[in-house]
Length: 415
Image 1: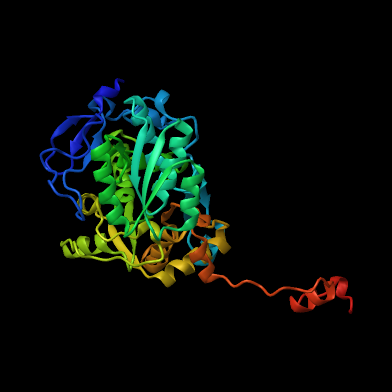
Image 2: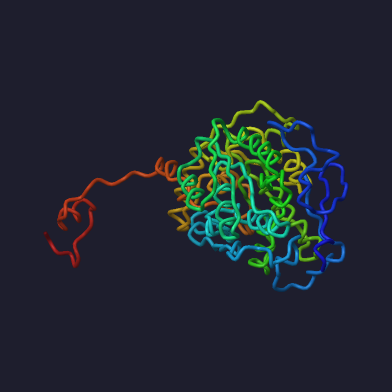
């Protein structure tokens, strides 16, 4: 299979383009000014027609066969193949038969964003580009920085000044050029595009770079392999700018094209109540370009979702839904997941599970449910602290400790 057979297709007009480093958005559909707006003319990778029904016989998948860059260009770091946890304690507690947690916090930089960075890095390598630019609230930034470090590439990162310190530290540890911007993510996004235009460096920004959607589709392929004997009925995932949403939907559409599956799961996107741009657009069919987000879930906190148009279109095409949850529900879910499954995820990930808790009463108990947990909890300790209470300091005396813990003495001994 020649990688030249893979093409870009405009999500708006349907025109086909050769894949190259000189094209990011459809030249016919993109707007001249894209500051603070959802992107028009988002491009998606089209699989070659000769691959149709090539997975009709179930078996092991080599994901590199279904990506537009040859394996030899990918950095020597392991991305993906993250665990799918059979959440027995949660199943028992909520009386569901099949609840699975797909934990992408085990990726090299602790987030789902490594899937996109991995492909972007390989694409840059193939095209002899050594500098990559990205705007991010933190996860995409630290992801690109870490993956690029493994590939010997240089990363220039634009982050809002209020990004969590753990993510700033990650970027600096990986040797990235960190450029904190006064303002929010949307401001950083726009400035990073201007920087790329001036320097000629490859821009990794979500939705703007077509390979960010393509890289994120890989989780669907993994879920297919991990649950090869079961159909997924419901898939819950967090939604910020909408690229994970589009990537996951594309993954399942590709699997259907390849003949691996007959049906696409019910996709339930979950947004924070304080960052519900796509939710509002999905149900009201209007895009508020003056929207301002405010939520503890920084990874899904965006004012204007850059992939808004495509995300809404994609979700409607598979008859999916969106749910909103508030910050208290997110923090509760983060704590619940930690206690009941041993998975400590960041607030944006917990939002997906909070969405499941919000609507689980209308889901049959025998359905197969997957919740996508996209980032590790250690990426944002400050918000995790809001739902825990530190213990008092104990005297170094065993009797004092046992008394304060209200524990019985061994063999019923008296003090």
